[in-house]
Length: 154
Image 1 (cartoon, helix red, strand yellow):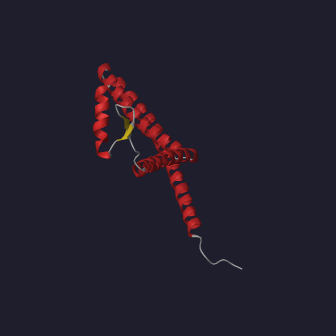
Image 2: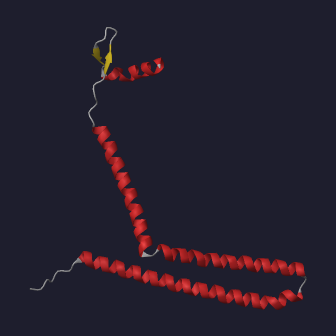
Image 3: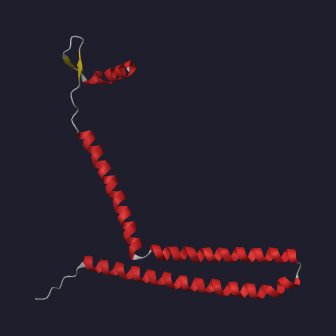
């Protein structure tokens, strides 16, 4: 007997996996192209500037070299950040982020439940010792006054 029903959960999961694979592939290709372009244009710029730098005064040449190094470092940082994002986007990175998010959500939920339990808890009777050594119940509206009085005594 054949099952003609579509399992929408499985289908949705498969679509999500396919989208993640496609995104990962696009990031890898973009990282590769960015790395290649950085290397190519760095070599090209420094090669072209060699003759130019030799023909001008040394002070200006140093300024131009410094500017080119700064531009190269900016491009290198861009490629580095893309590499970091590739590392975060792995299954291990996803698992770690998922674990942290789960822990935060669980912590918030436990905190909410504990505050609800404390609010729902029935207030306990409070008693005090009288001058003749007997226990006397403190009325609920006087509780604040007694605790303030006890704090002042201490």
